[in-house]
Length: 309
Image (tube, rainbow, N blue to C red; front, top):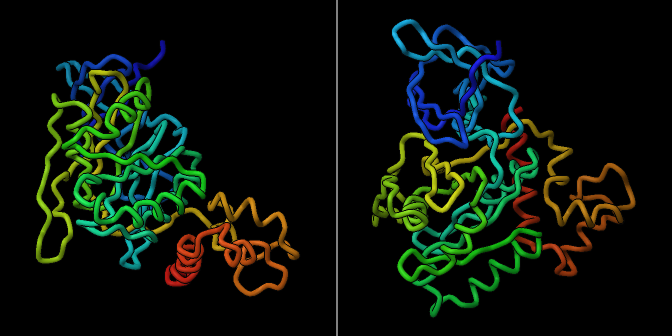
């Protein structure tokens, strides 16, 4: 007899909520005993989006008995030099990376680390530029420059405003029938955006800390919500640090699509794109084909890699 399966839609420590997607009938389950992972440094054995087997006890309660193989996942390492890593979400169809040019100011190296992780696990990524109504008139050049960097690297960029509704319908249409992760730094307006996508949802929304122009952590749990228009969104807590996991220093450049394309012309293989003569990637940076911002993020990841080894 086949074991019943369901998807984890909320993670609250050792307690979980499950639903047999695409049906949305949520029920609680617990994790008893130890489900060990090969990666002992992972802090959470089960993530939102995981498909699991479960057993129903005599009293009607449910116990998770097995984690089914993951199609993909988004994982981050703490940037405090520990080797511990945390899985943000599993089995994701698309990641929406929410950023704001200002309030708080976007940190391009942070965004690029998430993009590298998405590339590593084959998760398509869309960049959502939030709060554009607040600064479009004053920062049109900055918006254009940001879009040139990331659209030039191959990523869709959607300008949005929860106040004017700009971009909301485009995201809703793209989310239909898919499991969509929404992630970003604290204070970028991620929870407000999710509520704009579906006003019936109630992700926690917090204010910006004016002292540091950083967001306060308002979402403390990872949770999936169904959209009334179709599809699902995973809301994740605001992130302030994002360290790479499972990628060797020599491979990082492969996960910058524009660098991977240019590297076919490098004189040496392998090429670190830092000091070698005849490096087509450095030539592309000099020619403005690859943005210096993205190249500097790459160099920063090489330096960061040294700290963890």
